Every structure is written in C-alpha cells, then in structure tokens.
Image 1 (spheres, rainbow, N blue to C red):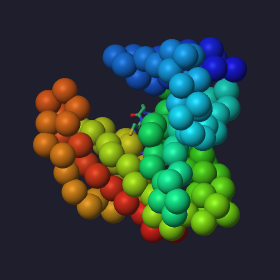
Image 2 (cartoon, protein in one colour):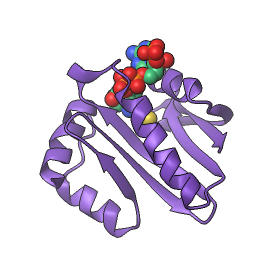
Image 3 (tube, rainbow, N blue to C red):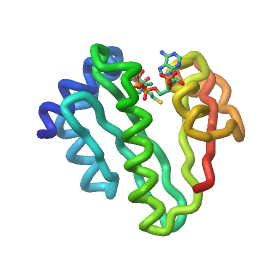
Length: 128
Ligand SMILES: CC(C)(COP(=O)(O)OP(=O)(O)OC[C@H]1O[C@@H](n2cnc3c(N)ncnc32)[C@H](O)[C@@H]1OP(=O)(O)O)[C@@H](O)C(=O)NCCC(=O)NCCS
C-alpha cells in the first residue's frame, strides 16, 4: 500500500517524490493518511489543532471532487477528535490548491517569503 502511495505521490509531485519509507516515517511520527487509488491526504493532529501535510490527486482524476471529498472526510474525523483549528501552507503559485482550500473555507493568515525554493508560502487556517 505504501508503495502505491509513493507511486501516486510521484505523479502528483514529480519534482519532489516521497518514497514508501518516507510515508512509513510519517505514520510512525503520528500522521494520519487517507488514501485511495486516486488520491491521498496526510495530516497530523496536535491537541485541538491539526495541520495538513500534503494532498494529491492523480492527474487523470482531477476536477472530479476527490480532493474536496478527502478534505471533508478528514474534517469529519478531526471534529470527532476535538480539533478546532486546521492549518496548512501552500506555495503562492499553486493556484489549483489555493482555490481548493479557499473553496473549503480556509483563509490566509500569513506568508513566508521564499519558503519553497524561492517561492512564497501562503499560510492558511480554518476553524471547524
Ligand atoms: C490541488 C489538487 C489536490 C486538487 O485536487 P482535485 O481533486 O482536482 O480538486 P477537486 O476536484 O476536489 O476541486 C475542488 C475545488 O478546488 C478548486 N480547484 C481544483 N483544481 C483547480 C484548478 N486546476 N484550477 C482552479 N481551481 C481548482 C475548484 O474550486 C474546485 O471546485 P470546482 O471543480 O467545483 O470548481 C490537485 O490539483 C493536485 O493533486 N495537485 C498537485 C499536488 C498539489 O499541488 N497538492 C497541493 C499541495 S499544498
């Protein structure tokens, strides 16, 4: 399963692929992973806060609502676990991801200049 996840991650992030071992390490460190054949989301809960580590959908399956659905499932689980606030960082030039998060109700709360290889990171938050 982690090998399939690594293959899917490579299709989503060709310039920064994560290995099956990377995913195993994330799980060991307490991250949750929701994954299917077409997409994955990795997140971490700390007390009443959570952080989205990454999200990806197979290039052939995009714009069919998969990412939005995974965000919904994640938030359902987090609410049950007492989470009140969700945070994330997204590259300023990643417009599909920024639109996804905005449509889901995340708002910008800050910016880290030149965070990703010279590209600004937008910090976002949603209260649930
Ligand atoms: C960002 C990503 C996860 C979106 O996945 P997706 O399954 O295609 O997204 P959805 O179909 O659930 O889209 C939900 C909403 O997000 C927005 N959105 C998604 N892709 C978009 C695009 N290419 N352009 C503009 N808005 C987009 C839209 O508002 C969309 O709603 P709509 O289709 O009703 O207009 C996907 O493009 C991806 O895997 N990108 C590469 C990996 C990546 O950059 N991950 C984010 C790292 S922070």
